[in-house]
Length: 450
Image (tube, rainbow, N blue to C red; front, side):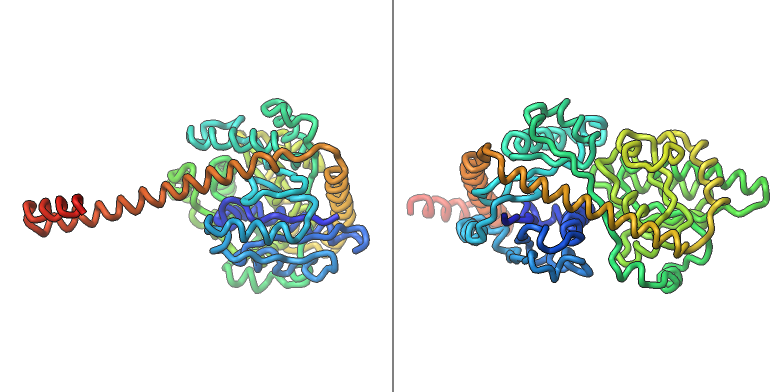
C-alpha cells in the first residue's frame, strides 16, 4: 500500500499561510515515524518546492526508508496549460490512497481519497464569515463529503457536526485525534538564549495563537485588566502575558487594532507583550519556559497548542467548549469563554502555585507519555489507510474531477482573455488622452476594416 501525502492543494498560499495545516501533516508523518519501520506504509509526499523545507526541517521522518518526497515546481503547479504533465507525474507514482484532501485535488487521482475537514466553525459562528465565505465552505464540504472515501474529523465534536450538517458523509467519517511531539532540538536546547533575545526576564503566561477573532484574545486581555487592578490595590506585580502569532485577521481587519486600543486604554503596555510571528524553534522555548498556557478559543477542531503544551508537561487553562472538554485532562482546567473574572482568578491561583522555568522531571515524564500517545495515533492512521484501501466503494472523484478541472481551465482561459482586453483598452484610453480624438478615431476605423 502506497500513500500519497498531498500538499498540492488549490493554492500554495493556502499551505504557506495556514501554519496549523502544515503542522498537521507533519504530525501525521511523525505519528508514522513513531512506529517500527515495517509497520508504516510506503509514503510519497507531493510537495511544492517552496514548502519542502518547512515540511521536513528538523523532522523525525525525513530519513525513514518508507518516506520519499516528490517535489513539484511551483510554476508547474500553477500553470493550467501543463496540467497533463503534473497528472502524469502523479500517476507514475502509483499511489493507492491520497491524504489529506482539503480541497478538490488539482489533478484526477485514480486511487482512494481521504478528506480532512478541520471544523465547522462557520455553522456555529456565521458572523465571523462573509456570505461568499459561507457559501464557499458549504460547497467545499459538500464536495468532499460526497466524493471522498473517508472524511477525517479531528475530534468527536467535529464528527457530530458533520453528521448534523453534512449527513451524506455520516457512514464515512473517521475520528482521528492527532498528537504531537517536540523535536529533539527543542528539548535539548536551553531557553535562556531565546528569553534574552526576546527580552523576557520574568515569569509569564503564554498565549500562542493567531490574532483571529474566534481565538478570543479579548477575554484574556480583560482578565489581565482585572488582575492588574487587583495587584495594584495589593501593591503587587501583575504577571507578564506573552502573545505570539500573526496579527492580521483577514476576515476582520479591525480586530487586532481593537485589541491594541484595549491595551493602551487600560495601561497594560508593559504587562502584555505581543511578539507577532516567531520562528518555530523560539516558540518551543516559549512553551517550555512559561509558567502557564492559556487556550481561550471560542471554537476549535482539535487544539494543536494544547497538544504541544501537554508534551512538555505544562499546565493549560482552556475555554469550556465541546472540543476542549474532549481534549482536557481535567474539568478543573476549563473556564467559561466569556468570563474574564473567573479566568483572572484561575490565572492568579495557577501562577501562585507554579514555578518559573522548566521542570525537567515533569517534562521527561510528559515526553514518555507523549511517545505512547503518538504511537497510538500512528496505528490509528495506518488503520485508516488500510480500511480506506480495502473498502469496495469506488471513489466518485474519478468521474467528477476531470469535468471540474476542465471547467476550471476554461474559466481561467476566459479570465486571461478578459484581462488582456482590459489591459489593451486601458492602454488605448491612456493614449487617447495624449492625441487628438479625431486622429485616434480614424486609426480605429482603419483597424476595424483590416
